[in-house]
Image (cartoon, rainbow, N blue to C red; front, side, top):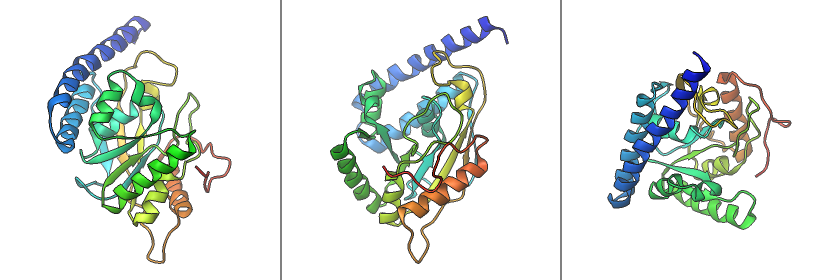
Length: 245
């Protein structure tokens, strides 16, 4: 495909996103109930990827709606959150870095969907968020995380933060590793325009706390091994076992 066609596709992808997100904001502003808003957002995300010719294909294990678990996924693109919204059941509460709350439109949508925001450089905020997530987990909520916390142009799985695995270990919830394929190529770090390309989400078998008990570190290590076995990118962690939050 020529550079001109790539440019035209990228412009169309952003226009399609605006055409879907602006009406979505209107609906979310008046629709009562976070569960209803999440179902509408899931439908909008699926519609967006269908409109740009990249419907999200999901394979692997199944996740039932409102299944109490902690989902963790690799992070390589700004599209990752929309991809998970399209791929997973609508009942998930996602942990999002605080900077996203200030992004026009996106911040409003995330707040209306009940996302949890955390400032990773603020120790007090991390502790407050950890307490809130522990409360959600012990009530059997379905939680979604990007444990790498950020992404850049370097392919590979970065060291994990511990928060997702601490919540799972304390609440004795299974951790469901998810691998997203195609997002880095479709909208890589530093790129302004999305590119054509397919998207796939692979749901791995759940990593369950053992009867004898599992620490957050062991849950994280086993989850990381599972994801690296499926991910076609290198391990960028110097210490593969864990990286404290």
